[in-house]
Amino acid sequence: MAQEIPPNKLKPPQHNRALNRQRLFSLLDRCLEYPVTWISGSAGAGKTTLALTYLQAKGLRPLWYQVDESDCDLASFFFHLTELVKQHAPQHSILPPLTAEYLHGIPVFTRNFAAQFYGYLPAGSVLVFDNFQDAGPDNPLDSILPEFLAAIPPHLHIIFLSRTISPDTISHLLDSDHVQSINWQHLQFTEEEIHDPIELQDNRPSFSRNEIANLHENTQAWAASSCFISYGGAAILTRPISWSRPCRKNWSIPMPLR
Image 1 (cartoon, rainbow, N blue to C red):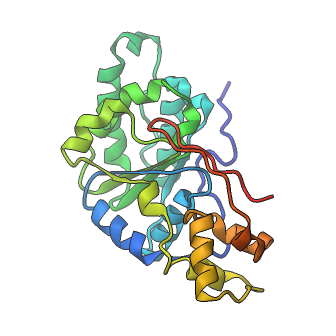
Image 2 (tube, rainbow, N blue to C red):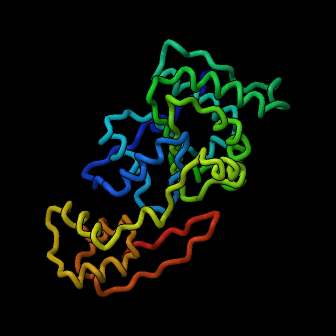
Image 3 (cartoon, rainbow, N blue to C red):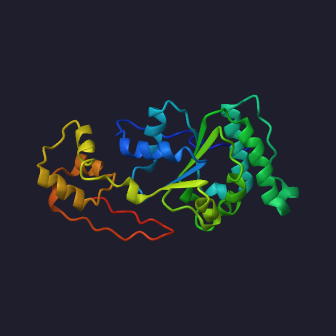
């Protein structure tokens, strides 16, 4: 019986009006000179929107992979990667499934699979793993990432989007500049940039310079503050927001303004 593919597993999400963040686009330009970029930040920080708008602005069609709890089964993970190849390079539809005889040599299987997988992808491809945190803590994907990322060819780049920073298993790749990082500190709006999401609103309020400064402080430059502006208006300027402190392994999720 054929395995069923969730409808949004291998498709990028839709987005409507979104801000082109030129400061971060320039940062991504530099990151894409390296094989892997890991973008981390809390929910609403703008990770997925950043990737979508950047790739659209560059005229790049992403190969999108929505990570979820099913990927804790490595056989399912490799199966869906094979389906991704079928979508973008249908002439290369045969990749080895992870079957019982490979279970005692998963690192070797991963290296061999990755080499074949990368070779099938179109030149200039950008592979995006979205919501990587949904695989859960201490998931088996963390253990195979060193082998999976070790031999990315020059024609391919991989972007991870996650509420967590990159796992310890690939710390040596960070040290070798194989992996570049964009984190919450980068994703935060500057006080100058906070004007831009306001300009996107059809019925935007008129804020003074001091009110903009208060807005920047009260939202702690969170990207989702643009949504707050839409629904909360000037109330944001006077009502403080309670934030929890992010930790290294699991970014906290700010509570939206009620």
